[in-house]
Image 1 (cartoon, rainbow, N blue to C red):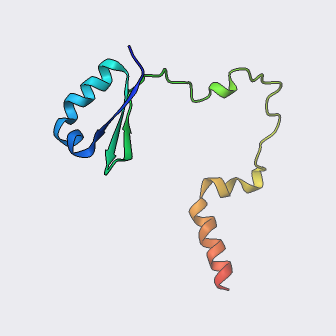
Image 2: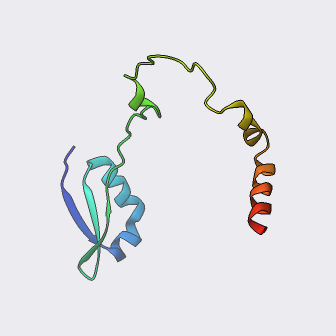
Length: 96
């Protein structure tokens, strides 16, 4: 498979788009589309890449300990239980 670059005018690309896409896929070449002699787009072959794990960055992470107490003190649990009520209270306080 070659890896060169070639150009075609936009009108030719419009007229032969599907055939040109087949050529790019078969050859691995990059196709540069021009308008009035100036490059406006590049068509490159698609390369399938394996998906990385969303948490791949944490693969080497070691858990040293676990929680020994709640991250939110129990007197503030109502905030988590009913955030709409808390928002209403904040708005009421601001309105005076």
